[in-house]
Length: 120
Image (cartoon, rainbow, N blue to C red):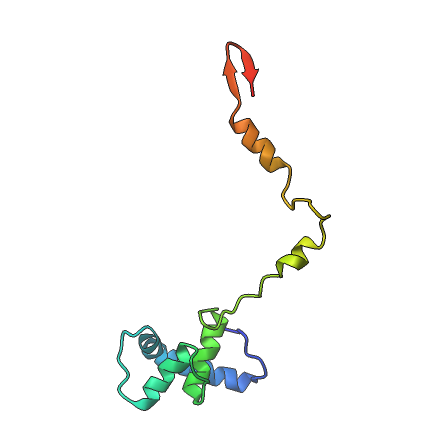
């Protein structure tokens, strides 16, 4: 599972995968609230899994690495959309950035055939 490991080396990734193999069900149960935290460390783990705190322990770092690799929220930040002014910069003032086919398709939907003749 080679996700966004960043500066981690192969040994760190192997440790993360080992921790995930052993504890993934437990981690998921805490994140999805299927299991109530019984200690402050488990509550901290929940906060990290929900993106409210920074990872401190190896377990937390491994789980955040796993969530990033699978692009699970809140770690799947999408790229920001361009500003509307930047999008419209390529068009002349007053021009519509819509293909002309839209109106044609809509007009064709209202065609009628009566008595062998085509009416618009």
